[in-house]
Length: 178
Image (cartoon, rainbow, N blue to C red; front, side, top):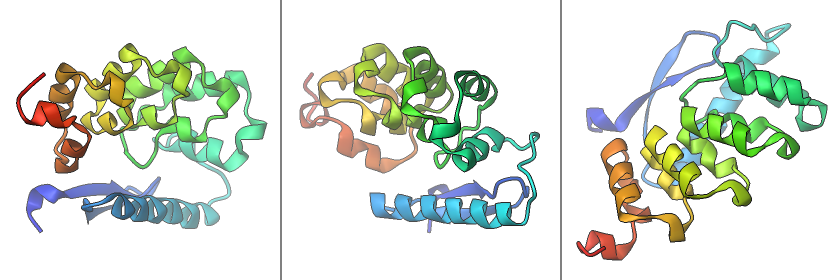
């Protein structure tokens, strides 16, 4: 495969890094996500505790304790400290719905735009979507169609190296009309 289709894949807390090809469809991305979670789970079985110095600490810790055992203070600390820009670790995925406030979601999407997938619909306004796409152009996939402005789509294309992002650009923009 061409060199630009390969991305580094960090195995949590090991420092090990493997290279994977970006897939051509969502099922390939899903496979990689499962592979990431499996690697993380296998690594964690050998650990007595999750090390706080790990960049993935909050993602793995919140996932391990479950959404029912989270507190507001814990979530606020996690959002404040977690800034891993890994597409396989959107922090909102492991945060309980009751703690996904507008402020928490805005911080999360500003650090990793792919968190937009887990933002409650009532918070997915133009500002939230714009922040997500500025952080990661691939977030365009999760922007409601009615909010996909010409400028937002253009920003997503300029930011993203993933060719599949063009699927989410309205047809009239591809034809050159606004």
